Length: 164
Image (cartoon, rainbow, N blue to C red):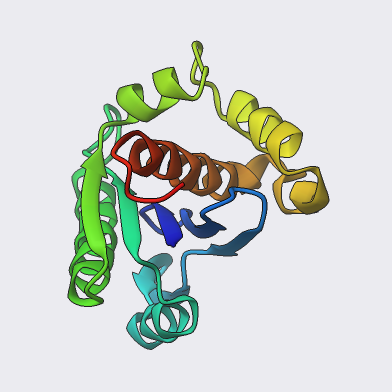
């Protein structure tokens, strides 16, 4: 069984774990930048996401249940929602078992009490030292969180007796 973790949004990521939890693949959310006037916005690369899902062929997906963040401008929140919603629809259409997970739920289960982005990167580095280079930069927190979401999902599936 292969478990996909998705941290949605323009700076998010996707991670795939095998049922052993040892082999991890991680990719940034496939997006491209579109410039309109003086501003640039991220848009989901639909073909890139479809291609990745076909290649990885996940059996289950654990998708972070996101919402707007306090302080975001309306246009920023709307753009984030567009990317997250499109990614959700594409992953659901892939046929993988789909589960939304609230951030506080998976973070608590993974032992991330403070839930700081650096804590996610440190935890992912500890769990997957062979992939540590994927989490080295501050902006790699989406990669770390996608991996931890996939691990949360793998553990849930083990509890349910789906594999193991």
